[in-house]
Length: 220
Image (cartoon, rainbow, N blue to C red; front, top):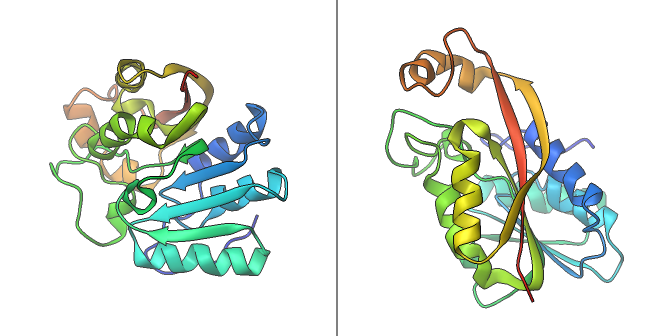
């Protein structure tokens, strides 16, 4: 699916495709209320809208103004049923609950401890362990899920699959990996290969990462 993309907005890539595919493959297209967190161009939100029934409401959020405008433009262009809001993580939908929450948060480890306040790198940089946003998502998401609701989150195995599974289980979700994909390093990870080797996150000479989609189900 071609997408309009404004400067500074995350380009749909392998993680985008993996998350959108998992939504359908996991049988979640019957959902009535869907939330896409960190929507970027709106690609995953629009894929969800096209896979669900006409009565489904899809909401997308992103902290980037450019991303919000890009997602709104793409929704209008594709005639999608997507409402786009701007804000930090789940704050724009405080007080609401959803059948499905989809998330492609920043997860790339970096030498900087904090998330950049602005700029393109905000779409992927996530602290020295890649978990600054992931950990917040895992701990906050139960408040936004309906009974028997589902979270699907995609991230790199470099930032700890076991950690994500453990956090989701700790907040009451039944969690498991439902999709995997081995991908060659893109420009960002290639530029950080020496740092990743130094931290022990990859073996010397490794230039591939495993992407995973983790599913967390909220009990009734």
